[in-house]
Image (cartoon, rainbow, N blue to C red; front, top):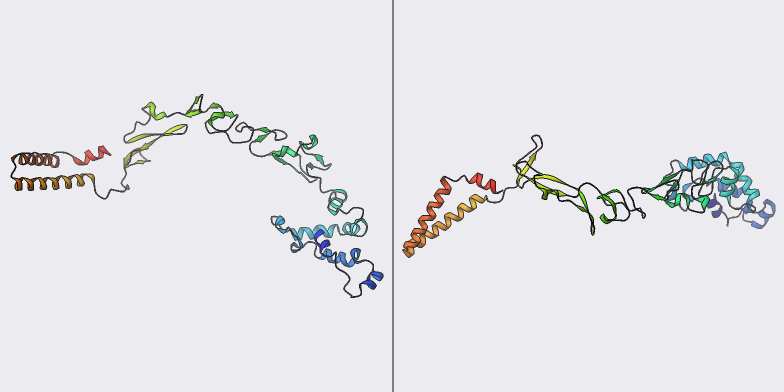
Length: 309
């Protein structure tokens, strides 16, 4: 209504002779012609300057038109008789005549004060919403924001300290400040330290935590976990660590690499023996050959390298 009123304030009768029309028909500012124009565009979103603020209201044009038709006579009464004495249409219509609204910080049929407002504070201490705030409905009970409790949302929840910051995960029974030093008590898995507050316990140092084959202990905050060694994956059915068949193999296996190096070195050594005709080099080459044959024929290289992994 205000937007339509503003857009028509500089208009006049369309006949062309404004002076004669106003003398015969009255001022356009309070004419029925202007009121008809206002009511025709009253519930159209395109006349609103802040239409984005109503984007979440479903069927707003239909609801507005329905309300306008229901109270058309009341709107006409204000337009013709109350504009000067009660220029605030919203307050006159919604608060005084229809009794649908309350002032901010008030609720219910009698517009009672929300918790805190009667003590000259913000409703719900500014940390929550008063049920029915601004309407003739609701209970007036504060629905507190996260971290606040109480009748007026003026107290901190048990797991929050006064500035409503979340307590550190090591805290048990609340905290008085941020971080592990602000804990009232430490949770299981942490111990209290005079300088650092609640400090994580490294359970892996205690030993005998992970007894499964190919398992290693991994310390976590407040606890620990048993993980498979590198190259192994957990079989969730048997609950054991087995060789990970999907693991990425190196570009060359360690045993093949060492075998290639040893045979290359032996070939170079024998070449030096032939070229230099050295007895000591020949003895050393013979020893190396025996060692290589022993490794190739008798040593289980597969189990040896698996053990290293």
